[in-house]
Length: 327
Image (cartoon, rainbow, N blue to C red):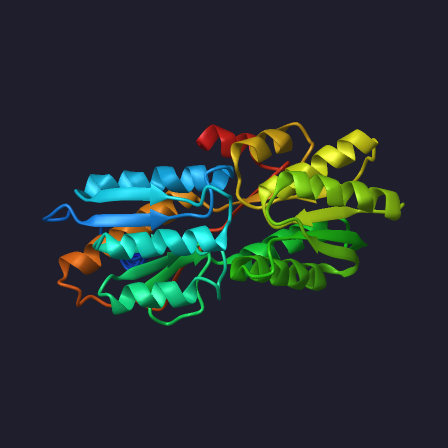
């Protein structure tokens, strides 16, 4: 009997060991995260974001600049007018004329940035997409969040919170942004899986808090019954929350997307109810590391067309204290 117990214990230990090896192997397969390398020369990398106002892009900038740890020069640029397509195009053209070694770009418009991105590649400058892809197969890869799955996570959470039925409003991102469309798709799929919901209206607030505030004020006048407002980013969710608070409406579930500090505080205070942590710092650092690996390989290394960040964390009124304590 003792021998049996001993053998059983050895079997359990062996299985745990194999499990750990399996997890480690999976982690090693994440390009640019678990296989970081240092550069042998100070490659010049231009990182073009959408704006410097939204907290998401502030955190992205922090992550991009942390890429200097790899021994490269990283310059982060953004349009002076937030989310301006023409300015982003000029920034890419400037990078081409400066003959930088690599460009990483979060496109303000999926189709609008495709031609200039292809121009950069034709000039011998590798490009990596981040956050919002371009409508081109020329970039080395695209680093971004699994927006559909994350959107479904929010949709399911709202469905559960409302008991499987209710009247819902959606604040979308800009129509030209692929990530905005994917999040909305996820919201709707998650709601559908969770019950029967009436979508009262769905409008774009262009990612902006002030526009979301204006739209929500109108909704509050138009719809006497609202159970939830699902926003495609935290800024729009905060605008909706402000309008709801000002109108004195109670019982409306409000969700965002990004886990920015203002949103986390709003969840802590009960003014918002859930968001998704996109970890933009880690995504941006990953993008820089992938560019370093490509340049160090002599421009021969290949990547999958898309490298989605799949570690999806939903932060809500249920776990906000634990999340903040772990930050």
